[in-house]
Image (cartoon, rainbow, N blue to C red; front, side, top):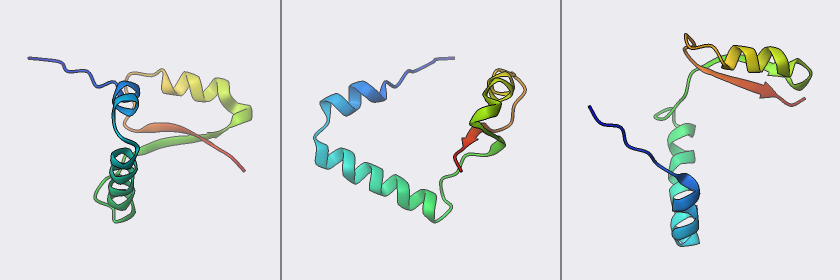
Length: 70
């Protein structure tokens, strides 16, 4: 077994802006057409941030815990 890390900040700092923009556009297109997706388990308003943090801290989650901005 092996574990590999990826530091986005380091990549962003060392990659030409045009490459970063191109990659983000490609990723956005994949999200838009449904090829790339992340399951969402729950959404919370910012006023419920304590519940959201508690939920996000659970090990048995099957999706992202997000805040909604209305």
